[in-house]
Amino acid sequence: MKDNIDLEILKQFVKINVTKNKANTRYGVAVLLLVLLNCAWACKTVHAIANAPNEDTVFYRLKPSLFDIDKYLWNSSLELLRKKKHTWNRRKVFLSVDETHEGYTGKFRKVINWIFGYTQKRGETGSFRFLVFALVSFNQRLVVRAVPVKIGQDTNHIILETAEEVRNKIKYKCVLFDRGFYKSELVKMLQDANIPFIIRAKIPKKISRCYDFAKKADGEIYDFQNVPVNLVRIRDSNSRKYGFLTNLPEQSWQSISSWYKQRWDIENIFLACDGIHLKTNSKKIELRYFCVVFSLIIYNLRSNKKIQKPLLEFCLNLIDYLLYKLKFITLTLKPPNLNIPGFSLIIQHFN
Image 1 (cartoon, one colour):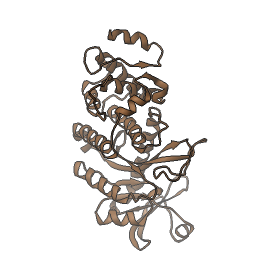
Image 2: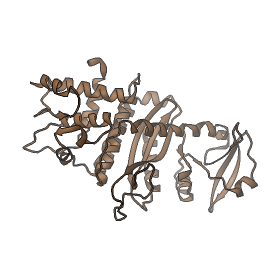
Image 3: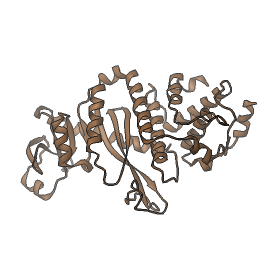
Image 4: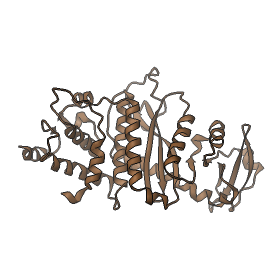
């Protein structure tokens, strides 16, 4: 059983404690963690997985604020980054930025400032949005921060703040953005702060007609809504036209296309975390935020290992090892009752 997971990994995970201990607590932190891991592994709600502690008990114990959740992910990421800093420093590292959407299927209420009207899947009436920052370096990925986005919120200052904080910890080549961040205010802010960036440019007919697109990258100064910035143009092997806004020097332009492809790693992170996402029907942004960050932390812990197994298998190993340790530690006051086949037989080892 000990071969399933690194002890240091488990220690880092258990260290992230967002529960409030009460004098009459019946369930320890380890039990709550076990319940949440099983919910993530099955991609279901606490109500569907656990009879005891029930959903109300688990969520009553979870009393994190938005600031606390942000701090937990940021601190745990820095700890993992510190342990692998020598590995990251030997690579070409990029900071990828993108939004992920958490679907909402309840009655849509515009008065809720966190629920957007955009829907991704059938049956959804809205969605919560989270701005995610991840360090990517080819086959190495680490989520460093995730921030909930409110309707009408200006996220430019969050991007600038995070980019500067990460730069103080590790040197990265540039920050990567898709066309959703094609904004002159963001471009000016990044240029003023001397933060290198690549933003996928929208190519209207005006740009397409006025400029040539060749297989060799070329560019010039472009007046982007009164903000001068380099517009680098290139055409791929399928004759598709691409434009990139950047403040990188000209000698780096030939590499922009290959560097920008690293941005897809953050999409792979979202895809992987969808399989272990902790479900909830709550409208509370704190619980929604916690569910997103919970899956991202599991992803980070898995990515910290030399040999990376599938994320579901890693989550299952966490569950197995936590059950194994619960027989020898006193973090639990009462064993859980989970709706999992054969779980009652496992509980007999507690007695």
